[in-house]
Image 1 (cartoon, rainbow, N blue to C red):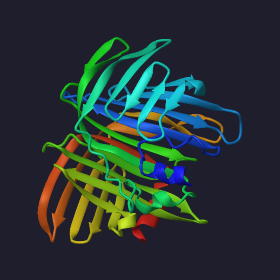
Image 2: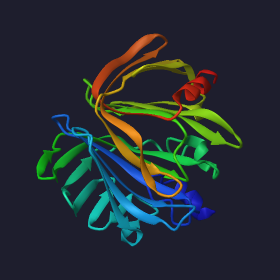
Image 3: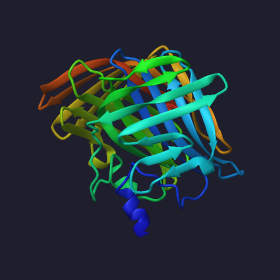
Image 4: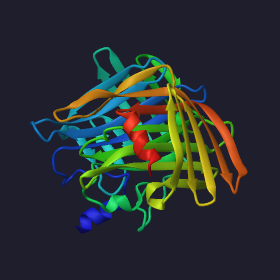
Length: 330
């Protein structure tokens, strides 16, 4: 119990040492160069609850081509700390400060290192151990979520299939998921290339199972300079409305005297990311790295900031109509 409690204070660390099957854990790195080239790197591990299938992996998603490479490793090649984000998979190393990659597999190759500076994690304290708040203390949750850095600066380069990508003066974002499975349906967007410097938006809403019922749980963070505005279920934020019209989503939330309006236009080029299933990791999450997002933040109807980005990551997965129905009835 003490070990489990200490782990909650480190959402960035590995949580699967004593976990039951099925179980997965993955760290999501989004790297966007100064020239707006977007690459996603996801190291992780998977354990089936129905068959003997346990392995570690590294997933690479190129936003330009839409190609997704999924490299499997023996679970013996997976080493991860339980009190910090420090993970090794084969010759590859991942932490809150940098990533080092060295993979050559068939026609795919990736090598290089990217360093992170000025990381801005979602605050962790006793009452709210990360972005899930007190829900983190419930051991029956299907999936747990952590935001390791809303925004940070990049330096370094990656050589992907012979092409060198310079990430100097680019921006990064890190989050992670762990648990038994992903939700049935969700909407998620993230961007930190806005007109104003050091602005980052991460917004997600999902259909969450709990004690035989389901509810629409949401986590929205807006970082402006060094201030994080939080709109979350556990802080009793309210959804004024959320609606979808073809490839556009409009979402308006209230938290006390604050009102946040989010407008998402889903991109045109996507890749299919692998996600946990009963027997294996399978291609089932369509992600776009060329979406656009706008937001408007007001306090007492007075504008704090309005901004937009054309380099947002977006996922819209599952039965969205039933999710929106749940959300609009909160």
